[in-house]
Length: 294
Ligand code: G1P
Figure 1 (cartoon, rainbow, N blue to C red):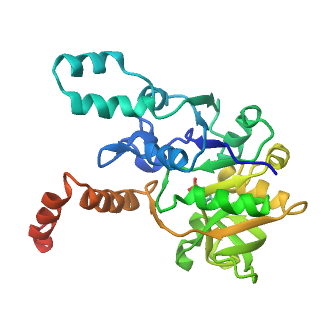
Figure 2 (spheres, rainbow, N blue to C red):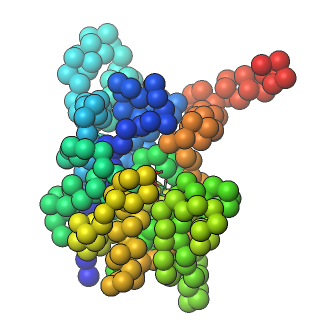
């Protein structure tokens, strides 16, 4: 029996949906209230017991490495000014965990980004977390999926039902619910990346959480460009289906699409409302707004 110990965070994308904000700043560093988007996924992996974290970066992404590193100057200044609360916050980020970085030299797609990290995955099953999908869940979404991997020892992708008109934005699966009483588990028969609406095999979309067996790397190496002219993970998984099972899992939890402007705003509002410090004042402010006057 193999165990999932490693996690990959692809963060090399160009962030075109948030331009011009992402011209000189990685989209992974845009804050949801007071934490950069990518930190939510990193904290989810840590809370799920994953020990070896690898972030795939690219040009212009140095801020991500700096964020999880020690900031001597900032710590010194906070210390001198007696700002111990802030000092603790800043230190907690760099003390969280050891993270390795690998660079994807060209933005050739999610599938290609994962292939770049092949040597660091040590021929073991691993988790993939896409930071754009921020998921509130208890136990954390990726933990729920590791538990499924532990039982079945096959790749698992997270699934969620989406409105039919949104199927063009996701990897969509053809799948059958498993009949052995396992709640939320699907046997995947096929999948397609961002299909035109009339070609979508269902409204079950792949959400950015995966547990993958190492055979995905051979499949990725054989996968050519697909949707959007990029090497797609979905196409490689489809290829794997010829040789091995892949399960779909409708996770328990709430997913926010922080990779989309509207989703990002919605997540910001919900997280701000739940924030211990800001919540009450922010709630009062929202209630006071006369929406017809803005
Ligand atoms: C990626 C995957 C897609 C998946 C989506 C989930 O697409 O390629 O299959 O449905 O993440 O968020 P992206 O949103 O990066 O274009």
